[in-house]
Image (cartoon, rainbow over all chains, first blue to last red; front, side, top):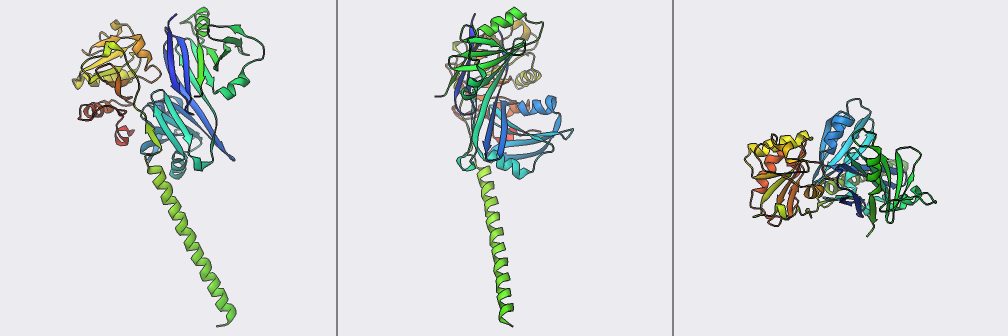
Length: 226
Length: 174
């Protein structure tokens, strides 16, 4: 079976290679990163261009409340119509960096300070987001979610969190590693020599269970910490 | 004036002066924070490092739009490209027959391998290629109006090597 290789750039700057069967098209790739420092913690999602508009239209319908400029890029602040959440998103060249607030939109200064405390490098393969040295913030975790149409999704944690995911006993061998069934019938843990992923199979009639398991058998994840 | 009243007056004057000083420092901090936030050194867009392959090689300056028939914005972008008379080629992973009535007269190439190099991004993806089929500039439009701005920008005298992304004003959301 032919393979497609995704070469992704993690928020920390690490390179991640995801090998998937070529026949099934990738429909979405999203990264997440969380920073902590003292009693402060904040999380960001990184999606391709159009991510903010999609969220404001389909996830939490809302309207733009404010627009500001940080690092020479536009930051859009939107508030959900129900007032339960708000989004602030920096529009990059290839990706968008989004954070979610509970409740109404925060004040302009808070948004400016938050995005101003980051150093951002936008690559076609992903967005590198690191806190500036003076902020005393540290990255706590990062992960990718890769969605493949009619087959399933992969949740790929960073290596230091991946070790906690893997059982101690041997799993069933696959083409590029080994696999364990999770608690849920449709979820699996996939372990590869340099990466791991939680794989959730799609619940659809478009593909058969056999096709989805064959797809799972071909997946490979390599996290290169350079 | 007794010495105690004079002492109180001097003390209060000093306290008021200190408060003014503190206010001035806080103002400076706010201004500096604004300068840091407005600076462009915190954001870098790295030029694309992608090659679509020999099928896309040519004289250079070729515009390729990666599109999917299931994405409404892709169809809008194709329509806009056709209206502008752009010499653009459509790249898709779907069979050519899917695009027979959707391509608006633009040439279509169905190439799974080339598609996979941009499949992790959301279509539509506009790319400006050099003669070898390598992507020189790239834009992921979020609105049809961005197509006009981008084509005008790419048609200009700028040489390749940057990201192809328009400035903050052009990206501004409605």
